[in-house]
Image 1 (tube, helix red, strand yellow):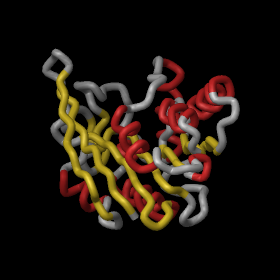
Image 2 (cartoon, helix red, strand yellow; image 1 turned 90 degrees about the vertical axis):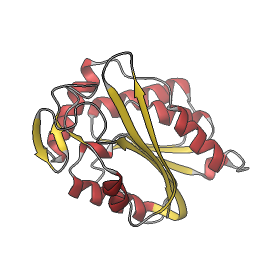
Image 3 (spheres, rainbow, N blue to C red; image 1 turned 90 degrees about the horizontal axis):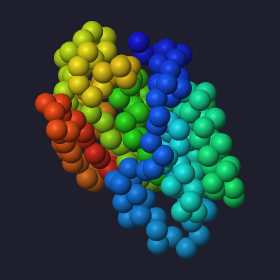
Length: 223
């Protein structure tokens, strides 16, 4: 399972059957603040989120006065994002588009920053390479990337049906019933980000009062 239409169907089911978060990830707030809060005219800063879901991060970005752009495969994700922004941030600028992150519909050197908050992991290693290459293309020179993805220490790795390199339909752990999951070793991430200058490379590991572990790579890189 790796085609755009297959992934679109999976996430359409998830977004229409589950309540999704309304507020941004704290690490994304820190990333945006550190890089752009001192900019005098924030509306000139263009920030793209690939796999923008139902728009929690876009809501935050737009409220802070930046131009926000989202690319999302799910019809419901796009519709819910636009509806919330229109209602809560009526003067927001930017665009939310349905599309495939392996073929971004933007010109070269368009964005000051790109955010991937656990979206690219749904794709095979080969398609993830394409996605990061596309992100590199649309970033401005010295533009910033924030990317977050699951490590091979996350509960569910090697469970269920294997469908590709380090990629499973998991049968246990926190990612069960969340579609295809590609887990990443440190080498995988460094290979995937070989075009970029990696600035921060962190591992975040948490438990939730059970035996389940969520372990993620949290990375900031630049073009």
